[in-house]
Amino acid sequence: MLPIDLSGKRAFVAGVADDGGFGFAIAKALAVAGASVCVGTWPPALGIFETLLRRGKLDASLRMPDGSKFELEKIYALDAEYDSLLDAPEELRAQKRYRDRGDFSIDGVVENLREDFGDPCLDIVVHSLANGPEVNKPLMQTSRKGYLAAHGASAYSFVSLAQRLQPLMRERGAFLGLSYLASRGVVADYGGGMASAKAALEADARMLALELGRGWGHRVNVISAGPYASRAASAIGFIHKMIKYYQMNAPLPDALRADEVGNAAAFLCSPLASGITGTVLYVDKGYHAMAAPADVGGLIDALSGSED
Ligand SMILES: NC(=O)c1ccc[n+]([C@@H]2O[C@H](COP(=O)([O-])OP(=O)(O)OC[C@H]3O[C@@H](n4cnc5c(N)ncnc54)[C@H](O)[C@@H]3O)[C@@H](O)[C@H]2O)c1
Image (cartoon, rainbow, N blue to C red):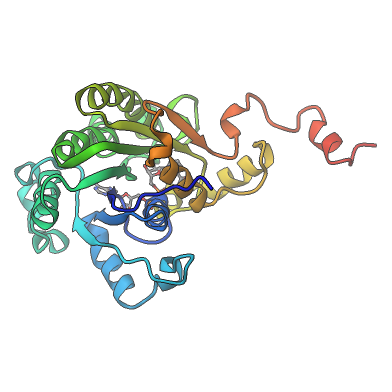
């Protein structure tokens, strides 16, 4: 047996607000491997997440393979657009969903983690969040404000988390970000600057791999995931068409499951991946390897024995 063993380790997963996305699947996989897991949740989604948890609506998803319940160690309010509370506009801080949440900035989460668990207290940091207010707009119609907001929330937030959480990391820590193939090839309709935000995230992960590796011995990797109908992806609008397209054209024709991303994340964050840093791992049923649709010349029919 070659186990993924994360017992004694603590993870912080930023970007969990329900059981329907990659953040939750990653958090659960890390817990199944033995880690204790804290999450960071966007304030506008935090109240609903707490209610779902309290009412037992997520109990089926929280069931662990041994029958026990996955208990999140702590849920922190986090708006990753803000490095410190002073960066957040006054009107935002006064909003109902923000005003009673304490310091929801990245600095705030760092201070809360330090207070709750001491210093150092972390082994794994996962960035599983993105936001592009103009994602539905073509780049030709994207405003400077929308473009920079996409980059701030989806790419710089990873850099900021790395900068600010590094002092809390124990030896041989692991950082992980989530990307999408639009970083290196055109995915029509993934607009608003989100494609370049993902490209920035991947480039930054490589730089951070060098800086955090040489500086502190930590590793930094990215998973580029295939399409999955999470809440965020469903809001973009064409996710079901994309899933179907991948099923028709990827080497593996079954739809991607979130736990497949979770398992890959647990591996990358584990000592089994001690030699892997600065990499983008595609967890997309192999679609990234394709340069043309799968069925152009009848190969697929021939393989399935349906050719005349
Ligand atoms: N679903 C897909 O098809 C797909 C494919 C490739 C990559 N990804 C990436 O996976 C990651 C997770 O997304 P998902 O699809 O699982 O959706 P998701 O809805 O589960 O996760 C996105 C999370 O980001 C949070 N968020 C948004 N803005 C935030 C902010 N300013 N501060 C803190 N949190 C914020 C949301 O509340 C949500 O919990 C993202 O980086 C996404 O781009 C998704």
